[in-house]
Image (cartoon, rainbow, N blue to C red):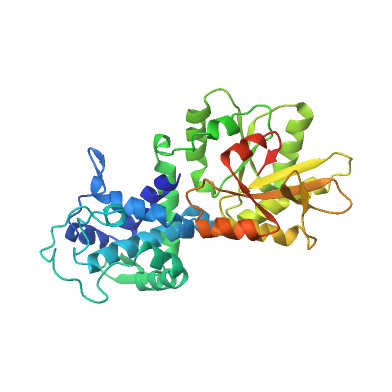
Amino acid sequence: MSEFKSKIAIRAALKIWPSLLSVVEELGMKPFDNSDGISDDYSWLIQKLGALSSITQQGDSPDVMLGVDEVLLTRLLLEEQLLDDGRSSGRGGKYGGKFHPGKSTSSSVGEKSKVGSRPLTVGEIYANWAELRYVTHNKYPFIKQSKGGKVTMSDPLPEIRRVLCALYSQADHETANWYPFASDILGNKNSNNVLLLGNEASLDLVLSSLQQLLGDTMQLSVTDSTRAWKKIKQQQVEDEHSLLIVVPDTDTEEPQSDLIHRIITSAASEQDSVNRNIYVAHGSLDVLKKCKDFLGEDPPILSNGLRKCIVASDTKTSATLFLPSWAKNVHPTQLNDAEMDPWLNIASEELLEELTSAVIV
């Protein structure tokens, strides 16, 4: 859903900061949404946001899962392109053709670039995102004008969260695309699959898009993290297979790693002799690294070529952590990091399909 989230972020940024409308107009870009759909003028921005999803969609916090960072990045990229004054617009090549506007109405097109006037490259933003995020967050407040004309400036994050939640609730499920092999994995009735939701705001969108993807082949069930394991166990006992969707607790701002922790420790607390192999596949390297904190200090064992963690010495529950190699929000350096980490595994599409007979979180 990387491209879908980028489009949501653009809509949110234009709504939160109306001044951006003059920026896109100065860049020679049409309105984002028009009668013919989304304007092609924004294809460069969508592609650049997608290329940088490995920083905006990486993290364990509810804000990252909601897409707050991508909204801040949208503001930064548009301001950076305006600073360029049209010099990079219309350029071809592997980089320029993807990450800069195809044309510009600026009269300065063709002028010699000045030092410090070009937009930051994808690589420069990737390497310096923590600092750039801090600067963008503080430089562009949310500005509100009262009926009496009084102007107030405040932290933009609460408004970004509010607007994103509203946009998710209004989103058309047909625009939310799944990976081609998702139907084979999520629609497997012989497996006990669990889908973790990044945020509660996207629940209706996920449900409607899954119904579009799976049709009547799979029943969908929704629960929260406190009842997730009980629901999983109930399905196993009754031999009732449905796709279980676990929603994080918005009130407590529950991180993904805490949600996973709750499910795994609940499974490990069962007083029985059942062998439980829990496979955790997550697109955020930060989430997987946080999971290591509750899996103990003992290094994993090697089982069938996979690094498997024994949750507790007195239980038969194990957890295996996977970073998906195909995910668009995973950078090659993050794959290398996971490859070198004794607690983590790299999952290909084929490997994940083979493991769908177990619980996937």
